[in-house]
Image (cartoon, rainbow over all chains, first blue to last red):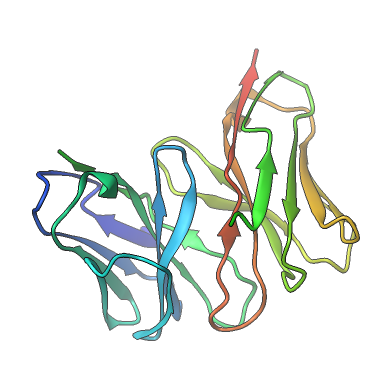
Length: 113
Length: 113
């Protein structure tokens, strides 16, 4: 009964490839996020969707494209992967109207060779 | 621009000690200040949070002290245990649908026997 689940947990790929990470939450939350955690553990927000609508889009290269087919799912597609994309990507969700409490997934570690 | 500054970067204390982690923020519109705890291989999880209308909040062995005029807040862990060894992140956000959590840079805490 995992609240926020991400797949895959590990992803190793070559530069220039395209890859996707999937996220699903079963908490009934309205808002979902993608955060990137770099090698120094710094957590930086990338995108946020509220009920399938994009509401936050930080200065992320347009090689990154989020997609939310419904409010329980938020996927991240990355084109033309670069070495600097290597990081742990966390999906999170929160309930609208409540305190800004985020529930995070376990992360997807992306390694670009 | 780092809107939430956190220190120290790492901390080692003995079992029973009281580690203190400090954070400072710049945006006076922030009105919610949580602390997240992250264990290796896991996503961050909410530990404790405070709003600026109180100066202190305690939950079990964890206490947040908040100084609105100085724009600073800190986490104290009483009677620290080896199981508290983790990375701790302070964060801040303002209200609204499009609000986002801005994280500090993290403090790696190690509690030794």
